[in-house]
Image (cartoon, rainbow, N blue to C red; front, side):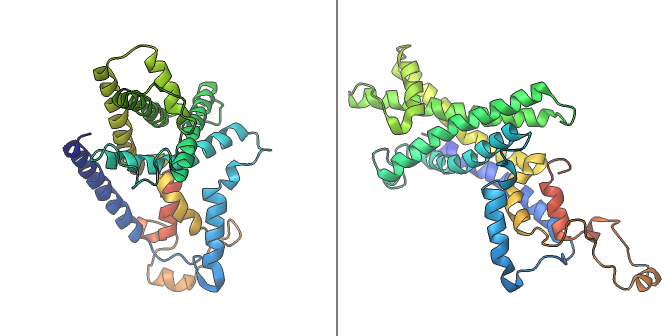
Length: 298
C-alpha cells in the first residue's frame, strides 16, 4: 500500500483523538470521590462479572420477550461486530506498510485460526449490515418515543460504508491474487463475503488497473473511516461505545434511586458550602462518567 500515507493517517487521527480524550479525562478528574464505589470484599470480581454480562454479552439487549427485540438484536450484532472487526482494522493499518501481513501466519487464510477468524469476520459484516438496516427501518417508521438526529444517520452511514468497503477490498484483492498466481477464481468458504464480491466483479471483466483502484478504495475507506469514527465519538451520544465498559464496572450496587446521606447539613449551611450540585466539581467522577455514557444527554 503506502507507508507514508498510512503514517500520516495514523499520526493525525490518533493525535487528535488523544488530545480529545485527554480533555475528557481532565473533566472526569474534576469530579469528587464517589461514595458508592468500592472494590473491597470481592466487589471487584462482582463488578467484572456484571461488566461481562451487561456490557459484553449485552444482557438488556438480548431479552427476546421485549417489544424492542429487533432493535436489541440489531444492537448486539453491531456491538459484537465492531469487536470482531476491530482486529481486522488493526490488520489493515499494518497492511499499509506490508500488504501481505497476516500476524506472522496466525491469520493466514489457510491457518486454522485465520480461517476461523475470516469466516467469523465475514459473517459479522453481514450481521452488522442487517443491524444497520433494522435501525434505518426503525428511523423511517419513527415511533413517537424516538428522537431522530442527523448524527445518528451519519454514524449508520459510516458503519455500513465500512462494511461494504471491507468486502470490496477483499473481493478485488482475491481477483488480483488470482491473476498474479495464474489460478482461476475459486470458492473460498472462510472468506465467502469477499468471494461473492469477487464473483460479481469478475463478471464485469475488469482490468488489473481497475481492480487495483477498487482494492485501494475499499482498503483506504475502511482504514480511514474507523479512525474518523473514533474521533467523532467523544463529541456524540455514541461516546458510550468507549465509556460503557468502565461505566458498567463502576455502577452502583445500592438500590436504584437511593440518595447519599448529607452529613453535617447545618454545618455546611453555616460554612456556605454547596449542598447539592451547582457546578461540575460538585459531581462525582462517576456522575460525570454517567453523562459521557448517556445516549440521550451525552
